[in-house]
Picture: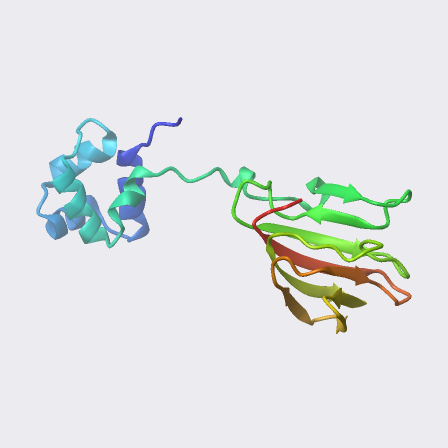
Length: 184
């Protein structure tokens, strides 16, 4: 577990508000000298002092006690996506747009070649799904209905709803969907 650097966090929030140490001292009632020592890490502030700083900066107290995730763990580059392919030529594929499946939601790009479908039979999963048609036209077989969706359309698929996607067109179809909880 990484140690939290409260002094660094306080300094960053102060600077983001455009305040000098002296200005923050005037807002908190804490001396400039103590604030400077806190930001340098040479003094440990009491919880009451941290509360005063939190109130003056209009920042929730707990924000001083958390470290941000490095952004490289949050970004998925186009050429770095995890892929699942279901055809010999890799034309039908799911590409994971979230870095992993550890969160509460999964974001996926599905590419359906012309005259192909996501599965032979209708299937269901426990999660709720919301899909957006990026490119092409697709038929969504859901429960006992067929819904034709065009580029720009979106749809919500309730949990445990039997469904499958089918591209009847002559161009590839791209569907982005979010699924919660993750199930791939």
